[in-house]
Image (tube, rainbow over all chains, first blue to last red; front, side):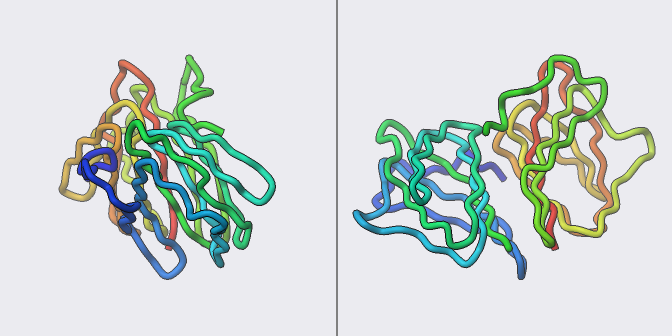
Length: 102
Length: 102
């Protein structure tokens, strides 16, 4: 199976697929295409999230930091660190790998 | 931090770095450059391993299956499924992301 194929041409909303899961861990592929978090929305998660950008480009906010991500860039978001996606490139799909764990 | 940079030009043995770790999970970057498992050697791990090939090319054996991996390909190896790396391309570094969990 390949993370960089089967990317829908038309993506009205973000697409999230679970690739592997156990009691402690969930591995997801997330595809964005110009999507961002709604104005004023912040994620606040019980689990730690390790996220890798595989294709495209994105800008995250994590508490008071702004982080630009390009392919190969990864970041470790602690549980309950408030974060949001400010921007993903409209030029191509942005493909994320996210590992949620404790 | 970026998974596709800081790749040593000279790699006498495989290079493994832990990117994130908790009680239940370990996320590693592994870089091979033409390396394979020693003849007759098989991994037999207590943890499940979800592995994604990010760059290069590889051929794994998992019990009686042979699996060819190219960038974006991933595979979920159950705990105690015997496996080995039969081949990685000598032409460029092969970069793996491995998530070990239970």
